[in-house]
Image (cartoon, rainbow, N blue to C red; front, top):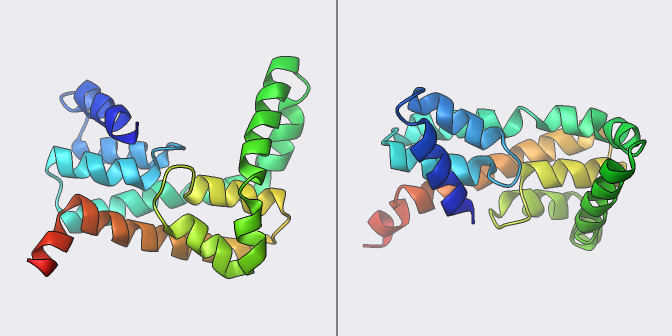
Amino acid sequence: MIDSITNYLVGTFQDKIPAELIIFFISLLPILELRGGMLAAKLLGVGLFKAFIICYAGNILPIPFILLFIRKIFRLLRRSEKLGRLVDKIEAGTMKKKEKVLRYKQWGLLLFVAVPLPGTGGWTGALLAALLDIRFKKSLPIIALGVLIADLIMSVISYGLLGAIIG
């Protein structure tokens, strides 16, 4: 799914805006995050170091805002019946993942964000931290480190470094 959405976005915007802006915006998006950004960077021929920095910046930018404001935003959205149901669904889906974080505390949050699998990442980690009332000063550095680790992993996967190291 991430591949197809990323391919669609790259195909739609590659001749209209600079590649760096495309990967930055893809990295900002929930679900795609830097996983999609790194795939887009490789598709667009952006160098590894530049892609690494841009994807990290794009993925980390919304995290403080999620940590600080998502609960207030959810309260406002609940005033609408349809949006309230959507918020309930998002919260329920996120809270299904809380056991992993609660069991291992900070390490759980770090691993949850760092392992680039569907349903994990900076957005979900920040949402989970906010819903579990993990303090901003504690959760932001953990999530930032997790995003950095995920960026390293995705760099190895997207740019074929693993094959170069092994082979």
